[in-house]
Image (cartoon, helix red, strand yellow):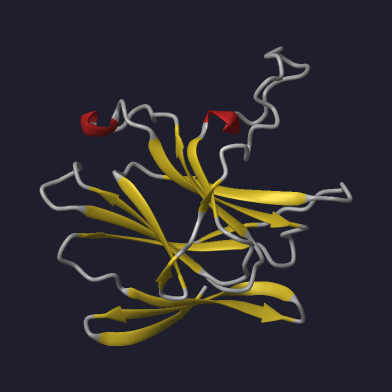
Length: 188
């Protein structure tokens, strides 16, 4: 479970959550259907032409290096983001990120520059990633993501994730899993 809380003193604050993983492809589902995205090549380009000057003005945060940028409409529905790596082992390996309903975000997928210290099959390839942007504070209702990996032929154990809210404040996540053919509820 990853929980990211943030707030700012700026009037028009927004916060971003990003995750990248070694993979050959990425898919995003929402409400059991493939998420519809639109190419948004101008997204994250605001600082692309700024000069690189250490300790003064600089290209922040480097997101102008992202390619194949695609963004979905703003939504408070949850997401299931799946990274599939075909070249890490004999069988495909999957990493799934489950985002529960309840935080209004714009979800973007993109290719980040290549990663260093990765297996040979991925050392010269761009790295798939997803980004979520929330307009407003994320202190009382933060980004929350449950991660789960599996190998081809296995089943994902996590069946559902749900935000636990009390009086408008995030208190944790309820995770429903299937372990050894038995349902288990975890409160985190």
